[in-house]
Image 1 (cartoon, rainbow, N blue to C red):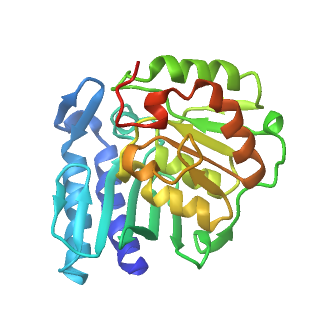
Image 2 (cartoon, rainbow, N blue to C red; image 1 turned 90 degrees about the horizontal axis):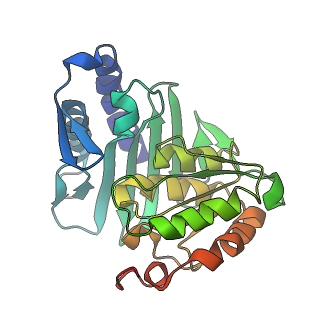
Image 3 (cartoon, rainbow, N blue to C red; image 1 turned 120 degrees about the vertical axis):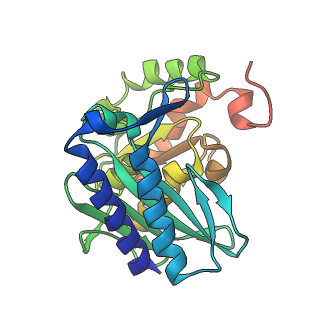
Length: 268
């Protein structure tokens, strides 16, 4: 299954790379404020789905642009172009993200960076790899020495005040904060030891599914803001190497509102 996902990701990456040569020719649509979709997203997603369903016609799909199709204990979770806004501006930080859930558990993961030709892969229980070389999370032990990735709210500002408080405190407690603009790559880089922690609010399953398995298989920890496992359901995610993860959760805790602890509540 992992090999099929890799094949699908590389097909999508080829489509993305060809389109990147002349961005002015692309048709772009605004889905909602600060949320764009291009014909490349659709073409890349269709290439992924065609590849996966040719191999596994009975599997279900959850994809960013086409939504949910099929019912199966196996479900592919797909973001054909994570970082569309970066891509449309020629900012070279975006990726293809493909994960497989088996009975609701993360089982396979591929994050492919077509700009650098970096292929991150993981299978449950078998470790995480970058271009077929084993990767591990960093060994930094103190938050004050850590480089932490994040993502700014950009379309849903419900939790903006909480995030602003997190940012204000954390920027004073760590070595640096980075916002590259592609959550799947942020998590893949964490798995490879390029950063030491990560947090973001309100992401979608296709943004983080593959990246979270990469982190876990690289020896890191992933949770929601309360230390629980509901991050795929509501998209509030914290991740890090084991030492930094605990300190990051603690640093963020004063700003975790009731609505973040229980996403069924309205923010207030």
